[in-house]
Every structure is written in structure tokens, then in C-alpha cells.
Image (cartoon, rainbow, N blue to C red; front, top):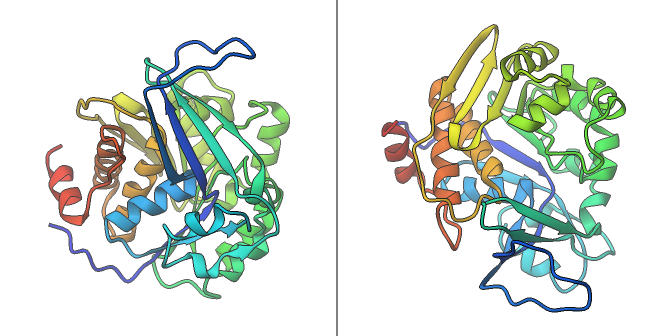
Length: 316
């Protein structure tokens, strides 16, 4: 069994916001009417928030890098990240809030305000990081297209992270404006400064402008720094990784799906935690799937602790 102690730290930077999850809804109501839904859950969320919560449950050495607003939800949100929130930059604005509506086919729809996450800057991120990385330290940037100011600063930010010695990872998510040549050109400005790219299938195809997944992932992997690779999260099909000309695929075990929101973020936590603990790619894929599998099959949301993670990863 892998030892829990690791000298490296995983830093997760990006959108930490409030999530209000409600369901189940299969058709949008007419304007001016009201619908009662059978469940709801208020919880900390966002791509960076979900990942950090999973790391906390696994007792993996980490820090959540973010900012915060100054309204009534700010203190509540910060209370869920007690080891990190003291370092967050505070802005005079409302807290970012996402309402996630679940549907019976396990798909979901999101409604979000702007709030504090659009003000997160490269300066905010760098001020919360050591000036020099320790060996094996990883910085994950996520919520790329939602953190509007940070998105514009990605080339300079990733360049500085590389100069400080960090391993860099990015989960862009889906661009609200859709994939276009303009969006792809913007990302091309910094892909070579990224070590690990973590996407789902449709994001991989969209970013690469390809219709064949292996070709798309290989193309993206070739555009990265060469120190990592392209990881593709495939839902019920598991996950795959293209790295240094090689490819690995790990099937997932069947689970009863309750809530898929944050599944990819949970996977990121497991996969990158494995890298922090110097595990090989096949093991990292298993760790990622194990964390995501528990997250999507529990309500209220649960993540594995360290012991549960090791047992789950051994069952593949």
C-alpha cells in the first residue's frame, strides 16, 4: 500500500464558488410558473473547490489557491477550506454562485453569476505560492474559461510557474462560447507551457478540432511541454492517457450514478495525487477513477479517505 507521506504539494488554483444542486428536472417550466423539485444540496463547489475537497478527504498535502467576495456567503464558503482561505484575496463583490439542475438521464444544466471568480488574477495566484517549488510540486489550473481575468493571463502565469520549477496541469473545462478557431488560437499561446492537460472526451475533440479521439489526444499531447501528457476522462468508459508516444486506458467499474457534477474534478484530484506520490500512469488513472466513482455514486457527496482510496485502487 502506498505511503501517505509525500514531500511534494498539489496546489489547486481556480474557481471556488457556491453550488446549489437541485433536481430532478426533465423539462424547463413555462415562464411565470413554479416547479417543486425533490432534492437540493448547498455545497462548496467549482472545479478547484471540488478537487480541493477531494484532496482534503484523502489527506493529500495540498492548498486551494483562490479569491473570495465579501457578501453573506463568503465566510460560509471559506469555512470549508480552513487551511487555505486565510491566504485568499478579498474583493468587494458578491460570491460566485452556480445553480446546477440535474436531469433523469444524469445530464445537468448550470446557471452561474459572475461574482468573485472573474476577478481572480495571476498576481493573486502567484502571491499564494512559494517563490520556488519543491521537487514534485504540481499546480493545477482549472475553471479556465470562467476565471475571466486569469484566463487572459495564462501565458504569463504558466511561464512564471515553469520558472519557479512547478509541474503544471490544466483542466480548461468547456468554453461557454463554444470551441472556435479563436478559442483554439488563444490556448495555443500557452499549451507548450503546460505539462499535463486533463479534459473529457468532448473537450478533447473540441480543442483539437478532430473527430477521432486517439488522434485528437495524440495531437494535443504533442503540443504540450513533453514532460507530461494528455489525460482524457471518459465517464463510464474510464480514462486514458497519452504520454511520450505511449497510450494507456483504464476501464471504470460500474457504479450507480447519483450526481455527476464534479466527476472530472474528483478524477483530477485522484490522478494528480498519484503523481505527487510518484505513482506510474496506470496507477494514476486508477486513483482518479476510484475518487470519481465514489463521488458520483453518493448523496450527500462523499470522497474516499486515504485508506479507502488504496483499497479501491487495488480492486481494478
